[in-house]
Image (spheres, rainbow, N blue to C red):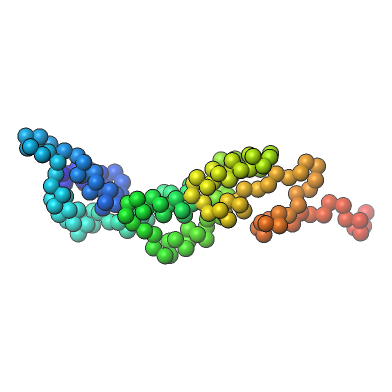
Length: 176
């Protein structure tokens, strides 16, 4: 059982609850016993020993999960995944993810779509995609650009203060 736990931990970080669940569902090799499932008390003792030796750490698990998920997912989805493992984000990490939410949403949108939607239905589809990734509604609204009118210069979106104002195309007072 210890060897199996160390093998799983060598592959990637696991939360204590996840490793416990995996160890409890795996039958022991000696199937001659009437109940081949491991004793929960023995599993808890093993997990305690692994934590004391530094092999198992919920803090490392959270950090690894945030590091791998943050470039592709929003704060809501990361929090939900950690909650399923019985863990939570610390306040500093949550604040950092909240601050970078708009930039991360824009990066995900750019990689997936790359150009503004042609119509409102397509824009709604793009927004649903980001919502499914767990980004906040405000970040989604600001990250998904509106399609520009054909033949007109791109006007500033009043809902998006990050947009730069459109340049005046025909300045009548400029010298020629």
